[in-house]
Image (cartoon, rainbow, N blue to C red):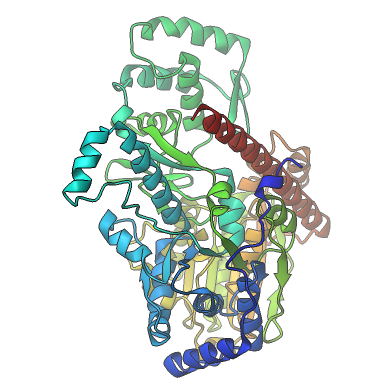
Length: 591
């Protein structure tokens, strides 16, 4: 079996949990926070201690489930790492539960990217450490780089340092232990982000900047026309014979310039920058810098960069001074990093349908838990439109109408650009509309806190997806609860389900309606590679109703397309892991 090495052996951390201990910890939750954990929450926490993926629906108190499991697993010899999707959520959960842990006699800390190495060493000494999943991975890579650098220090110097009582880098790793990892939003961290390895960059090996080649490639890319000169296929750019000849001819202009890669790759990346990556969709420009938008969470990450010259190609496209490419100091796939823990477990509201991924890559079983109260979420029929403009006009008028009745409305979009358009449309009749996408002036927590008020309309991106708990005012609940208008499908059905989970939580009333149109991202991005996407587009092109048309056959077709995309992602993850295993084996043989 290709991935047999990834299947976990029984963990030394895995042991039967004493129910008396469970009851005593549950009592502390009640004494400190004034809450009584539900039986479903307790059973889900126990499932985590047994090394499983617990599917717990959104709004069922996953923060408390994670905290209970962490408290049950923590002891003097095992460090528990609670990994969330971002620093905001890790800080929130840490602040909410630290009093409980301290009452139990457990130490707890929270990582953030601005901490020094010494501060992180202290944080990792705690019984329980909260942080973003990426931060745990990057700290591991930093330790590997420091360990490797010891080889360049003369043995005599290390000996003298030891005699003088000076600790070496090798003896002072940042991440001192990897006992237990509890992964919040496990499908996001372990599946959605699994296609992108963690890469620690270093400017030490960067060569001189190839700005002339970047500018020449950008100039040539602006002259090329899609369909005539090139075809974009997923992440590849295929040039026509005529375009290929022009690229060869243009090479004469940069023949004497320093190149980091073959000249055609410069042109290919420039074409991708102009035709595949869009401002305020895939990235933003802030303070004369390109900052990447996470496609899964909608959050902006100034610290991330694209590799292979793509980041510099986008900078040139935006009229910015290109930054120097960094070399790769260390990298690891998320799968291989998580396998380094003695016990791995996680929870999410959307594990069903991805049991194969969890079993194949991590050897983990999924256990589904029911809701504490019956769901009152009302799903309205999906509506389809021939154009984005018609769809957005309907969405804005519908949001205004529902908010006028005293309810709160969330309009969920897929990009900053789309959110800004929707905000302008709604603001014509409702000046109090708020926009949440990471570039707004208002504080995120404040906007989320106000989103459940009467007559409130909040336009947002995926940033208000996972982990966002909108408190709905009692008067809004009396009028039908929070209403969600989703303006586009996502590539994965799980993300659509996560978004719907912002509404009607814990037995509250609420409603959801999905809208879609001919040129939505899920169709446009995949039309070249998936026949089904083109067939759906041809059907949508014939629609003409300004109020949308419910078409059950297209509902089924889009779900089928999403399953195809999810299968395609699964195959890519298999290939990534196979390549990672091969590289790791070669490195071990060379070492």
